[in-house]
Image 1: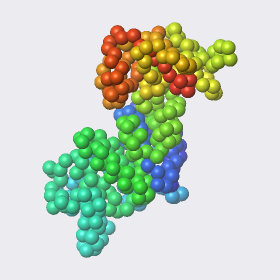
Image 2: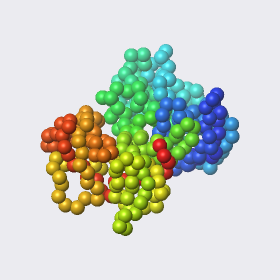
Image 3: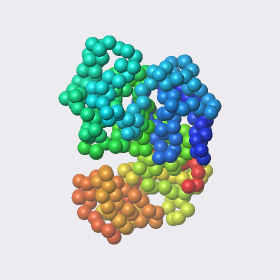
Image 4: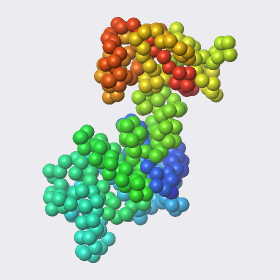
Length: 352
């Protein structure tokens, strides 16, 4: 449906390099990357605001590289919304219909219909100057979608919206996707990718370094950079050894972890999700692949509840829901045991 083939674009000291993306019809594709990674530049290339130095862009098997913006049938919503401050909400939404000389009756019918769909009918006669971020986002989306683009391009659509309003916009975007709209959404926020995407791409320094479903990308990251995006904080340099027929990852420090058989490199970086580690206040009974005694070094709030830092020969970061933390009744310098299964550890290539 949308295909980018070996896109290269030099922008001063920065370059997009050999970017290849293939987005299927009806997908919600989230491109995830830090500020300055090239996310917005890719959207501008797809929209036709700029052209690549080399490579091609295809929509519906039609090469659109170099095609004028108005002939691409894509809709771009900017991070700052780019609504016209000298126009009412109605005039903003109707703008593209006037430019194609639609009849007044058709304009009124379509603007009224889409305003109702986006729950902004009560704003139609108002100026855009005093609208909230959430209201501006709805106006910008309505103005873009009234022309029925094949693809909706979103540049950090939740970045400028109050936290209390983000859920409303997320629901609206899910609704648009369920109707079959193909969406390309760029963001630096991992949570947006998890909550909205059917597929994810991660971009770093102008290169796509991994694509897949959210589960594929965040459960099996290809490197430490991608792992950090999924909130992973437990990283250990390891070498793989086999002891009594059991595969183990031996750390540079004192740790040695039992891991699940897989085609891992002989050495690299082992990652463990904080949520995969369990804390026990007394030595656990039963058989555990990995069980270590440690001391609580720090406790502080996190978005998941509490994050507990434990020194068990290696430093472990453990996420504990608030209710579970209350039951643990631990504090700094408490003695604890931690356990995690063999399949919790994943070894990535690289050294840092």
